[in-house]
Every structure is written in structure tokens, then in C-alpha cells.
Image (cartoon, rainbow, N blue to C red; front, side, top):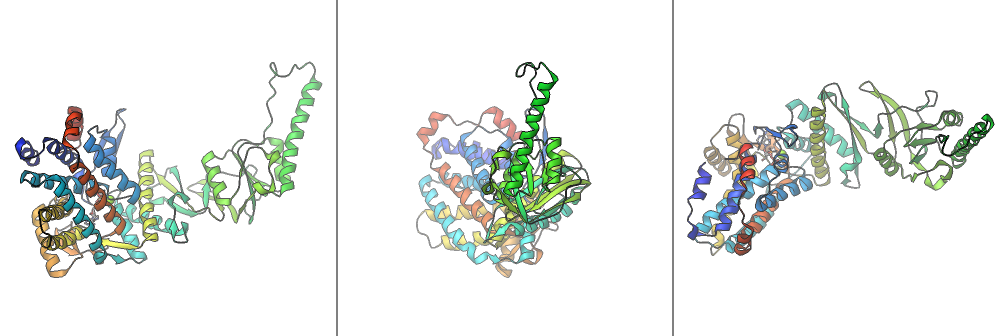
Amino acid sequence: MAEETILESTERTSGSEALRKNVQAAIALAGAVRSTLGPKGLDKLLVDDQGQTLVTNDGVTVLESAKVEHPVAKMIINASSTQDRVARDGTTSTVVICAEMLRNAWQLVRQGVHPATIARGFAQAEKFALESLKELSIDADRSQIQSAIETSLTGKLDKAMEKHLAKLSLDAGEIILTDGRADPTRVKIIKQNGGSMLDTELITGLALAKSRIHSEMKERGGPGSILILDGGIERKQPQFEAKLNITSTGMLDAFRKSESKSILSQIDNLVEIGCELLACKEGIDDEARQALLDNGILTYRRVEKKDLDLLSRACGANLVPDASRATKQDLGAFIKTREELRGGINHWILDAEDTGATLIARGSTDGVLEEVDRCFADGLGVACQLLEEPTLLPGAGATQVALARRLRRHAESVPGREQMAIEAWADALESIPRALAANAGYDGIDSLLKLTAAHNDQGDFIGLDLDDGEAKDTISRGILEPLKITKQAISGATEAAISILRIDDVLWAQMDAQIPAEVEERLQGFGAE
Ligand code: ADP
Ligand code: MG
């Protein structure tokens, strides 16, 4: 459409051919995800090579599954993946802003501004903007943190579920917050098929969908010591033909007796070292089961390896391969153990120094469960960030407009052509409010003008209400975003744009940077302009 034509009709003489192609690739890429931006963004239906489908409105998911080969497109996708890793959100914004920076840069190149000058101006603009963010940021209270998590989940699920997950994410973040740090890997997620998404619940402690090996064992207790066995307490099956030449029933008996002795000696060792709770990866022999019951050792078997690892970290216990060789030093400590029914399934729930929390995700299909899992992980990532650094910025385009206004004023004081680059960078930020408005069915330019005028009259915190297209206060409406997300989006987009501007023409020409037809097609398929 219009964008492509401007680029197409550009004369080769007015700038570098390689840059033109690169900008084109960036714009195609942004076109593929722009329509997903914001609460009114559309979902994309992705179909992979195996014909599996996934509905998402997450920019990075769209891009990562597009299997794009173009090197410049890859650089931008990388920026968006970094955004996802570092900030858990803001991936679409990063791509949209980066492409807009490049588009504006291209216009300057056509006017005869050298890419290196533009790159310098962009770097200056970035620095100035990051410093200005301080003036726009607010210290968040708990309810504002929750609003920010909700904002970040907006458009991913239905409203009620977004609210529910935002609450659970914050609760989980608070459980795992220690000494000002929140490590999201301390929250385990169990996916339980059945029920409604809204039944998804959070449990303090480590929960496993398991029952003790003998119903007469005491299910509650603690504090106490736990042993984690990376094996089982089982009999070896006699390998009749190969190992033993059985000539009489007496021999088999002898074999059984020696096995039984070995099993009992393993239990003796557990009693000796003072083990009260046992979790093991493999099975427990019947005879061992009885002996464990008699000795008051609460036991869980067939625990998955990854849960054993979590248990070992949470309780400070070693993973021991063989019960007969376990020592006191291998034991860990737990505070409380119990069993509870959750969604009709029995769960073993353990509290220890470092057990964190467990989310039991519920949903009617595997697809729904995946979605709940993904969204919770995003929400938790944002919650952890905000608990560590409770600083927020206004959303709904307010921050971008406030920054752009400041930058334009600042640009006036910059001599030389960098001034033009700073203005171009400021314009690029405004692609966010424009796209938010356009995706909600309003005119992008009109909305931006309305917003800018409102900032002039009412200050920095005015954003777009996408239900009626009006400019409104974002703080009272709770449309807030973590400082870290915006900061990272601005830096990531600028860095990618600058690297692309600096790509050496000659080098590039050798690489023949066409968008391969097949990739072009894929991008078109995703709704590229
Ligand atoms: P990203 O991948 O960049 O996070 P999103 O689709 O999540 O993309 O959209 C984020 C943008 O949507 C942010 O600019 C945010 O301020 C804006 N946004 C979120 N909720 C609202 C809302 N209720 N009203 C207006 N804008 C919103
Ligand atoms: Mg988002």
C-alpha cells in the first residue's frame, strides 16, 4: 500500500539501495504485527508446518513463528525477543517503533542526510528520552501494580480472566519476594484439564498432584527432615535365564530373601539418619512400603525429575541415588506437609524455606491451558519486575506523546542535522498512539493531534480511551506500564535501528538482501501492508 509505493518509487541516486531494502523489510515486518497492538488489537491465526494452529495477539509469537530469513528482519525479531526476555512485554511496540524509526530515517536519507548523522541523532534522542522518563514516572502502590499487570495482560484473554490472572501473578510475586528480589522460577505451574479458566488457583508452597503411598501414613506434619531419592526402593527382577541358573525352588527363595534383606537394610538406613519424609523418582516395593509405614516415614513415589529438582532446591536437600548410602548431610528440611483436594485431584503440598508457590491452571482444553500458562508467566514476569522496582509510566500512548513533545523542544537546541534526526525519532515514538487508535477504529492522525493538544492543556498523563477515542487521564483509569518495559522498548528499538543504519552498503550488496518471495508471502499472510 502507500508505504510500499513511497519506497518503491525512490530513486536509487537519493540514497543507498541496501538501506532502502532494509527499511522495506522492517516495514513489512511491523506491518505483520501492528494490527495486534493494544487492547483492540486483532488476534492472528498462526498455522505451522504441521498444520497446528495457534491464535495469538502477541507480536513476538507471530514473528518467531514466521520463520523469517531476512537478516534485517531477524535483527528486529531479535530485539523483540530480547524485549520479551528482559521485560516480558512490549514486544510489538519494539518492532513498530523500530520500523517507524527506519522509515523516518529513510526520508532523511532521501533529503541528503547521511545515515551516520541520523544514527548519532537517534542515539542522542534515546539518551534524552531515557532521562526524561524520570519526570513521567510514578511510584506505584499495590493496587497500581495490579493495574499495571492487568494493562500488560490486556487483550490476551477475556477481561475477567485478565483480572484474575493479574491478581494471582501479584500474589505469587509477593510470596516469592525475598530481600527485594523475586525469581519467577520459584513459581511452579501445574496444568489441570477440566473446569473453567477462572478456577485457576494459587497455592503457597510446592504442590504436586500426588498421594502418599499408603493411606495409613500420616498426611500432615512438620517441621521435619526430607530425603530426596533419585531412584526407588525396589526389588531387582531375577533374570531367570540369563543371570541365575535356577535349579531348585530353594535357590529362588534364597534370591528373594537376599533382596528382601537389602530392601529392609535401606529402610534401616533411612531410620538411622532420621528421615521423616521421603520423595523418590521410582517405585517402592510392597515390603518397603510396609516398613516405611511402620517406621513413620511419609513417602511419595514416582515424582518427576523436575519436581525432585524443585524439592531439592526448596528444602536444601541433596539428590541421592541410593537409599542405603544416604547420610544425614543429604537430608533437607521442610516446614509443613499436607494433602488437599484441588479440582477433585489430590495434591501433596509442601512448605519449606524456599518452596515458593504453585499455580494450578485450569481450563477445558489443552489449548486453553497453554494460553493460561503463557499469560500467567507474562503476568508473573511483570509482577516480579514491579515488586523489585515499583515504578510506573502512563500507558495508552501518554508516555510516547509526552516524550515526543519534550524531544521536539530539545531538538531546537541541537545544532546541525542531528536536529532533524531527533525530530524523526520523536515522530517514530508517536507511531504507538497512532496504531492504538487505528486498531480501535479511530483515525490515527486525528487521535494523535487530540492527544498532543490535551497534553498541552492538561499535562503528561493523558492517554487515549479506546472505547470512545477521547483523551483522558491514565492514572485514574489505571492504565499504567512498568518503567522497565518502556525503557527496554525504546533502547531495543533504537539499537536495532542504529545497527541497521550502520550496515555497510558494500558488505550488504554481497549478501543480496532481497526479501525472499516465500517470506514476503508469509508476511503478507500475516496481514502485512
Ligand atoms: P506489546 O507487545 O507492545 O506489549 P500490546 O498489544 O500488549 O503490545 O499493547 C501494548 C500497548 O497497549 C501499550 O502501549 C499500552 O499502553 C496500550 N494499552 C493497554 N491497555 C490499554 C487500554 N486499556 N487503553 C489504551 N491503551 C492500552
Ligand atoms: Mg503487551
